[in-house]
Every structure is written in C-alpha cells, then in structure tokens.
Length: 336
Image (cartoon, rainbow, N blue to C red):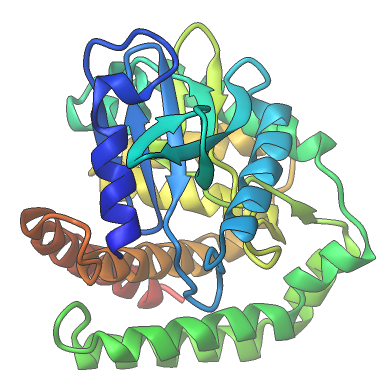
C-alpha cells in the first residue's frame, strides 16, 4: 500500500490542490479516503479487491468514480462536481497537474460537518423534524428510482440467502476478535430459520415491484442536514447491494438510529416512511434487514481494523465498533 501512503501524504498538503486551501482534514474509511479542504471534498478509492468490490486497477477506480458522479447526481446534483486526475511530475503530486496520471479523485462540494447526521446524533441534536425530512426525501426517491427484471432478481429468496452466506463466511474469519462464537451461532440459526419460513414472502415482494435500484448505503454518515436534505455516497461498485428491497434501505437508517441510542427516532422514521409510501409489509422484514445491516457494518469495521494505512488508534476503535454492531445484529436476530 505504498502507493496509497504517497497519495494520501500529498493530498494532505495544501499546495497539492488547484484552488487556494488553508487546511486539509482527512477522513479514512475501509475502502477510501476523503480530503476536506474547506470548500471542497476530494475522494480517492484504495486499490483493493475484497471480492464484493474491485478497485484493484487505476482504470477500475476511474470508472467507479465516474459512475459515482453520475448516480449521486440524482440525489445531490449540486454537490457532485467532476472526476479529476491526480498527476505526478518529477516526484511532485498534484490534482489536475502535469505529468503521469497516478490516481483519480472525485471532487465534491464540502458539507458543513456539523450538519452530518452522525455528528448531530453524537451531540444529541438530531430532531424529529430532521428525521421527518429524511423520511420524505428517501420515500420520494424510492418512488422514482427504477426497477426491472434484472434488478428484481437481487431481492429473491436465493439472492438474499447468498448475501447472508457471504456475511457468515466473512464473520467466521473474525470469530472471537469481533464476534463471539455463540453470538455468531445465534445470528446464523435465527436468520436461516427466518429465510426458510418466509420464502414466499420474499418472492411476493419481488412480484410487488419492491426491489429497486436504491441508495445502498443509507446511514447517518451519508446524510447531511442543511437547508435541504443531502443523501450522498451511493454504492456503485456492486449491483447486489443497491439493488434491494426498499425495506432493506429503510432498515439501514432505522438500525443506525438504534446504534446511536435513538430508538424513538428510529421508530418515528419508520412510521413517517410508511405514511409516505403505505408499504406496511416492510414491518415484517424490518428486524430481519436491521440484523443484516448491523452485520454488514460490523464486517466493514473489521476490514478497517485490518487496514495498515489506518492509524493504530482508529484500527482499535474499529474492532470495538465491530463488536457493538455484531451485538446489535444478535439482538435483532433474537426477534426473528
């Protein structure tokens, strides 16, 4: 990962950018880095191949960022700007400079960080008014986002079971460190039983047209509360994540609100979404998909804990976070 270290070091400096920059703040995730300059945010993807995503080549990373620009412009047209080359000339790395292209960055308008829903939740400033606006925004998006025979396949019983099989496979690797073996057993047993009992229910959701091209990563860190509600950072690297039951999308934010110790806001969000859509069958799947989303977040935290480019303190915090997510996943599993 020497390449990542060099690029991150360069983009952490003010002089790397085409515009005047006073300070650069870096946000490190499991699969990407975002650089906040005060006016703009620049995102790069790490050269990873995790199976479910493949950023292993420069061309693939460029294609993914271009797709991200295209799809996120639907929900946030005023935020997403352009994909720019990162160049190197005589050892000097610049954004949109001269020389050889060594990486690509997605340029976005920077959000006020105090408006990110995660920060509002941590500071106990998130309100029902915020949640109501978010519910209306995502419900409106679900009304217009497309479905098709190809998309609907991702919501079938077999496709959902395959997603869970992958989670069980990955979670087993982190047994004891992030997920207790007994806990793992409970989640697997309850989820498997729920799937078997509800095979027809999943197939009916497909027939009802409830499997759509959703956002795919609908949690508080990807929502900004400002004059308008901005829901950003859609998943574009693997169709099986955004192409899902709208119930899975609703469950994601509901789970995240639970995770941040805001169960009342979680319930309120679901209620307001149901008022907008009248899709009351979601309730039957809510705990199932909450369980799924918590397990996915736990898995992502595990990946971050193994990333040598992430500072040791953050890696240790990621393990703690992973345990908390798997604890929550097990709580939901017991309700199935």
